[in-house]
Image 1 (cartoon, rainbow over the protein chains, first blue to last red):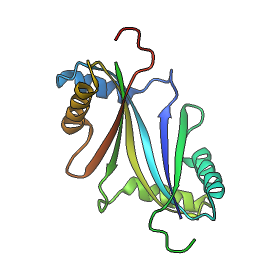
Image 2 (tube, each protein chain N blue to C red):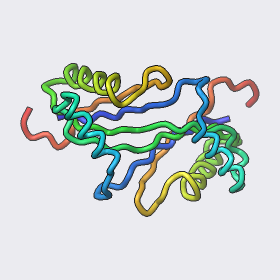
Image 3 (tube, rainbow over the protein chains, first blue to last red):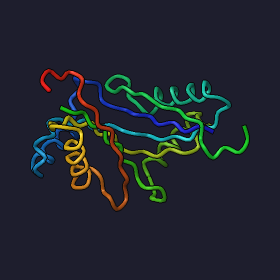
Image 4 (cartoon, helix red, strand yellow):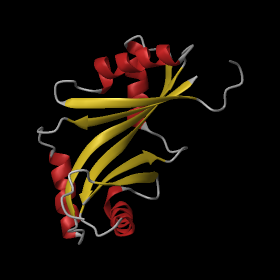
Amino acid sequence: MFTAKVYIQLKSGILDPQGKAVEHALASLGFGQISTARVGKLIELTVDAADQAEAETIVRGACEKLLANPVIEEYRYDIQRAEQEAEA
Amino acid sequence: MFTAKVYIQLKSGILDPQGKAVEHALASLGFGQISTARVGKLIELTVDAADQAEAETIVRGACEKLLANPVIEEYRYDIQRAEQEAEA
């Protein structure tokens, strides 16, 4: 069993309206030191795979087919073996 | 200048409808090896601060006052000095 953390962000150059809204809200709240904000997604998955390579193949497939929009978003992921592993 | 990455997730035990939707969609697409999905936010900030400690104070304040809902969400952050630093 593996745990995958997938980080998805809009590509640089793609307008991020949610990030702009956060920037304005932060400025209104007195956080003028924060000049830019970009909002993305963090998706944690539990993956049943025999080894790290198989887990990576599954996670990459899930990103390409569902989780990320490769036209405007870029993604990266960390995969770790789940700690509470009894067998293996 | 510092770059902060803020990772926000629902606390464990809080229902995550978006994560459930992702789980079902993944199962429909044939990713039955992925048993759970939790969807959170990744927010990247650019912070103008004199040192790491000041940057942390600003980022923690922004999380508590705007970015995270501490009742149902937990957050963590990484702060790094921006690479393209001319002064300092």
